[in-house]
Length: 317
Image 1 (cartoon, one colour):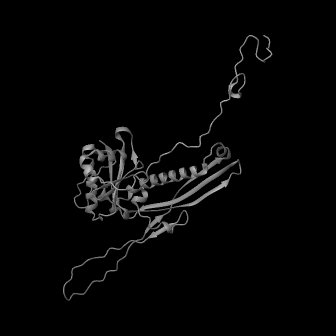
Image 2 (cartoon, rainbow, N blue to C red; image 1 turned 90 degrees about the vertical axis):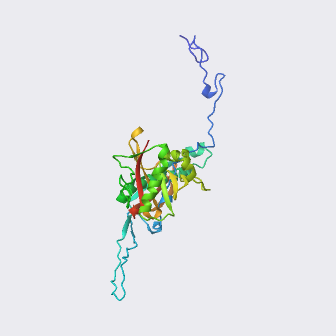
């Protein structure tokens, strides 16, 4: 077989190289868009359901914040002429340990910055910030149930009545669309039986329960709107005395029809949280042509008064 002057074997047809525009082909360039595909994030609720009174007192990972509690004062009967008994109220401080930390550490290659007319580092920092909030929310929400008072959860909840079924891990409370509002009102009753203030109450529910409440005619009557957008913290409105939030970050287990969630109601004084993004920096990489963005967040949380929070273990009925 000979070789033609064009460089192709005799008796064959040359295949045009379109990538280089040769042999009648045309160059097809890659075009980099100046836009990014928009991302959406899970709503975070931690700031809305906890108090952050001690946040300014932490400085480093491993710190312990001593929280003083209000002591109990005894009330006694009085009779004219009697000697008064003197009480010395004492309280046990609560320790808030700053024992958790999350970090991010990412390269932004110089080539990426050249190929896109986008402020890549700004976009990556924004993404890291949102992901950090989601990670912290998930961690803290998973710890709340252990601190809830025994009378505020389980199949025999109610400090006075003791007959309210809020479900357990072994026997979760099955909720259908027709009785979605009942679990909300029962959780309110549990807090009422503990004499919890009616202001600043919160309720965090799974996504499917929010749908049930919206579909319920009675729920529509209770659910009131407000000018606060639900996009950033999942706020839905007001039911009874609760500010209601929807979260996909609630603790859950199982899958499919047997999946169960732990939802919470309470007063902001029951849960304390302290966290700081202690390190955020941009630096040049020593190993390649790239910038590095990294950050460290330290935090701690604690249920400081278990009577102020109620929990229910629920499944979709």
